[in-house]
Length: 154
Image 1 (tube, rainbow, N blue to C red):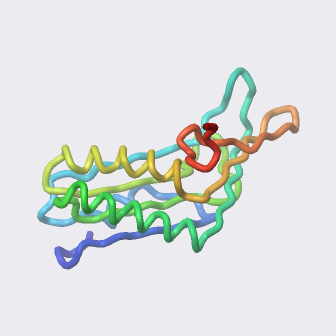
Image 2 (cartoon, helix red, strand yellow; image 1 turned 90 degrees about the vertical axis):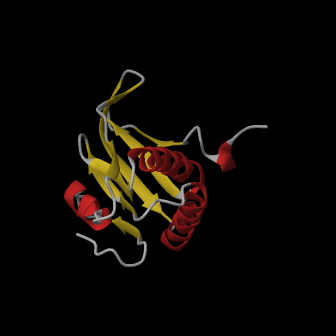
Image 3 (cartoon, rainbow, N blue to C red; image 1 turned 180 degrees about the horizontal axis):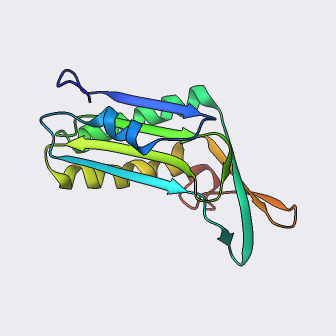
């Protein structure tokens, strides 16, 4: 559990399996009555194709920098947010396992819920983390996020 202290902005990009408890514990504090968690997992199908796993790659220094920009935006929009934590998996992520876990704490649920939604949407649009879907028939496809600003057509 986090002590009251200064607000914490935590980022972890890892090849290790992610833990909801670790993220939740890192944003827990006595003055907050709300911890909102988002868990993005690997699903088993996409447009009728059987997905076997996802594979993620990232440009880590830029990804960390972009996440910190998101944190700054969150703190400007929701000043009561206390702690923010994003853990994102890299490498192979099997079906049902977490690719990303976001935890945000605040005194009341409204701010943390809105901030978590903003965080995942903005992460998908701006953070240089790339996803490849691997299908049953040894096929694969690098995916674009519809939110991604640098792939949008004019």
